[in-house]
Length: 321
Ligand SMILES: NC(=O)c1ccc[n+]([C@@H]2O[C@H](COP(=O)([O-])OP(=O)(O)OC[C@H]3O[C@@H](n4cnc5c(N)ncnc54)[C@H](OP(=O)(O)O)[C@@H]3O)[C@@H](O)[C@H]2O)c1
Image (cartoon, rainbow, N blue to C red):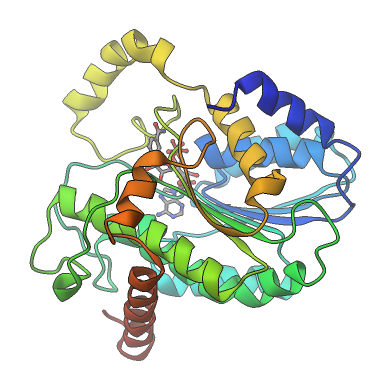
């Protein structure tokens, strides 16, 4: 476990050491872990160029108003998008790419909680899988040229890094005969497919792009808006308001999680390679076992990537997976 004090000290020590003009994109930056990681980045980096995405314009306005004065030389811009649709991911990526040729940091934390079964988007992908995995893979595909450009110009402690915040350590076997879970959907299967795809992809893409870092993290329990913002039955949302305070001492604040994620994406140890990181900012022991079991190694990642690209092509050609 990396102690929070160590993390804060490491993060604070970066002030004045990062070069001016680093570029970062936070998908899911309008709330929770994404927002708080973005806050640390924006306050720490000199003249940062920061873009963030989500659906909520009002949250974006609140964040811009509170963050801008903390670093008046920074550029902070909201790109509104519903990332559950691949066509929106493409449009949002295009808007970003029109403005920036290099990308140092891509942080993806878009998601919600649900107990609902399979709910397909108009593109025929389950909404949970779309946000937790497919949109993330598509952002990476679209932004690889900008990440590669930043990596080859990486005279800075960050280089080029991608981090997907979901649930490293909770992998399982992927059923490739029903990769999109059209026939065998359950919440458990959806969790395993999204989590394992993120882990396997981090391993595979790191092998293919050796100067870029790919990380999948598990934040642990973090007291964000995820319960209130989610599609849970109202009785559960109400119950959570009573139960959550009892667990508060076991949960991290969004501020701590932001510090921990900023640490991971700036620490020298994680500068290149494929990393599966736990809630204490260490390599996940559970993920290590999952890799050893063959659930999420580079080979699985290659299949995940190929299958994902086939789905992206189909959606682009036919409008539906
Ligand atoms: N918090 C925890 O305890 C915990 C534990 C384990 C794993 N996680 C995972 O960590 C990630 C981040 O969680 P969090 O706690 O930071 O959640 P959060 O505070 O609810 O933030 C979720 C973010 O996702 C964005 N989002 C949701 N649906 C979207 C859509 N259709 N299109 C674009 N953006 C969308 C939200 O923005 P808009 O509302 O503006 O669209 C928001 O910025 C999630 O994947 C979650 O499953 C969280």
